[in-house]
Image (cartoon, rainbow, N blue to C red; front, side, top):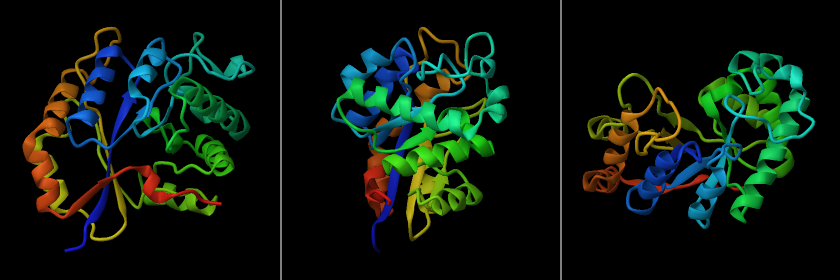
Length: 248
């Protein structure tokens, strides 16, 4: 059976020091192959020092904290911060400029280029955000996470590389248990590149989060010896977004 390509990406590097520690452990000791970095948090610089040399993309953050672009229009902020509710009001031009600013900051902090881009809280579900992100990604020739077929089609129409399939979610309970991982790996498509989005980590110590102890369950899942064995048994090839190459 040919190996099926699977990107196991941990979101929220830099979100909180404890979350960062868990993500790095999941990459260094477990089966997580990639992570995405929130560059506009108070904990970003410390996270970058520990993550250099790993496969790291940008976790575009339009839902928490301040923008990186100095001229970001203040009427698109609420209480001095980004707001998910205001995301539909952002123009593609504003989003494109902020994406490029966050990518530039990532490179400065990490000393390496991002492998790809995804979006905190999937705000690229909003058409203007997706349009601006696609423009920026096309310009710098980076892949972007797609979470469904319409998004995948839009990105590819812009000449942006993206994953062929997507798995993952969050909720009141931990999403990635060992049992669910086994079920999902057994059902992976035979062709294409699948991204498995996950949120391993230790419970946040500085940031209030609705996904807290659940992160520790996910961390245990991706550190478990059975996880690595499952990948082998199912003929799955762990990889990262660099497998998609660069478009354009």
